[in-house]
Image 1: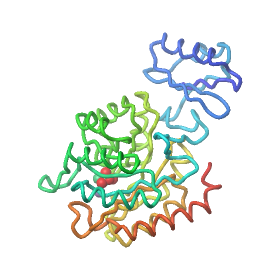
Image 2 (image 1 turned 90 degrees about the vertical axis):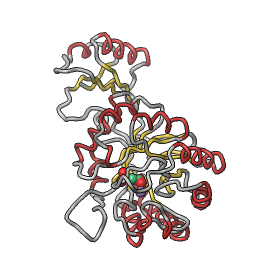
Image 3 (image 1 turned 135 degrees about the horizontal axis):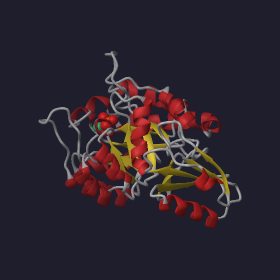
Image 4 (image 1 turned 180 degrees about the vertical axis):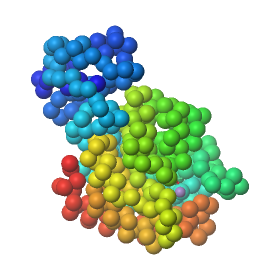
Length: 339
Ligand code: PEP
Ligand code: MN
């Protein structure tokens, strides 16, 4: 059930509806919007009787939700959500650029890349401390030591830190050092992990699973929001197909498809989406052209020596060029990307 308040509903009237929802044993999710507040209801097993709400002061309508999702949808919040992270944002007017190495390998490596990321004007730095590797013998990340380096980078350059948590214990650590928790493609349906980050004060970058449909991906976001964390950023990072010319098939049609259903910001990862250095910039351009709110891009000071994902890492020079190109494209399509 979705309660839509009248445009002139008072805070007092909204609070009264929230109280009724709680008294019924359900969880209220008030979403203030530009023109009106809507309140999502979760925690109900069967359908909720609209007559509890229809006569309450300030209520415009009580709508039964027939779709599988309640909180990610534009029915609840017609305008786009901007996820704010301190003085930076994803989903606002500015194209959000998140860049950095696949993994933090050393202090020197992290700082060398961060310096270039800062210089480009990007506001977000990525770098894995806990890496989900296919082989148990591959480099697994520096763990907490990697997080400490990330925190130093934040201090030195004012960049917001995006880093992955692989499990619930990892979330406890990431919360201490970072600004955005990344949930990787392989964890997209780790439901206890989704619930845990749903109770985090930090925003969540939710990557699309390797073989996830749009509905499965959006329902994963719904898990996070149902716990009360509404600061979710979706990330298209490519899916498994029969194609062999790329590591994954970057599904750029997912951007307008998500946009039609959800108010959440959505960004593109052309690095994992292609797996190949020479394809990253062309697909980054395309991602911005289809209306993504931002990009997450892997950059390395010495791609040939990278301990993970070297084949898709941009050099510092290539990255600098990419940023100037995608900014120009964003300028052109920004008015269309608003909706
Ligand atoms: C990453 O960002 O380095 C990563 C492992 O991404 P994904 O979960 O999309 O594979
Ligand atoms: Mn990677």
